[in-house]
Length: 279
Image 1 (spheres, rainbow, N blue to C red):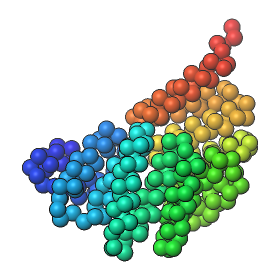
Image 2 (image 1 turned 90 degrees about the vertical axis):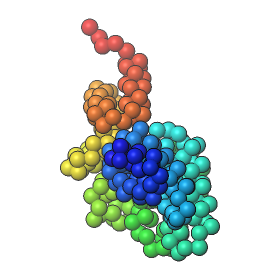
Image 3 (image 1 turned 90 degrees about the horizontal axis):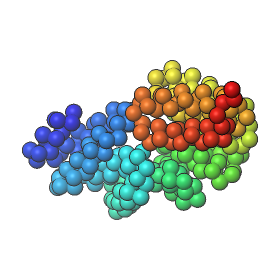
Image 4 (image 1 turned 120 degrees about the vertical axis):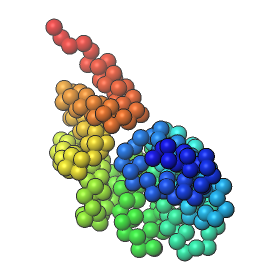
């Protein structure tokens, strides 16, 4: 893949480069190989900008895909710059499909603020995305935005609205195993924050079983991490350490460097609080 697109880029086949990158999106998203992801969509962005025949929607798609990759490695401000460019492009595009783009970019702007730890900033773009998707009749998109919005409400201490949003999302996504699992996972995570760690642990274990059935390594790793947080909140320190180590190993196997670093810090904090084992 990389040698082919690199050769196409050097030969000036701009359309082939950006079309190839967009066609590879499902694979890139699944593998989460961030160095490859960023290389590929930077190459595609240069190509689509230089391609006079590229439609505005192609530029927006490449901008959005690159921004999600930047968000994944913690480069939030760079991601937001690209997303706001895509948003402005969509706002100035008279094509009827541009409204779908507007809603997507607003969703990802909100999600980026969430990842950056800025829930208050995430709320307006997510609510606008939800409104637009509802007006468009894009019920799947509505459900996906509700999942992210639920996390925002949880971060703001608004647990009941968060759980209500997740219930609606799970109902709408019942026919999509991966997305339904994500909604269930977030339900468990919110229950931990709401002070119900034992119930949260059961919900998260159920979600992890589904993630493993789907062979989704990253979600399985994340759910082990969230189960560790629930165990820690319930005072089950040994179980928390065991789950964190398992999550750390799973993230390492998936080559998710930012997650590995976060889990390492968490394990270090746990070790510092509990001290050395008694003899």
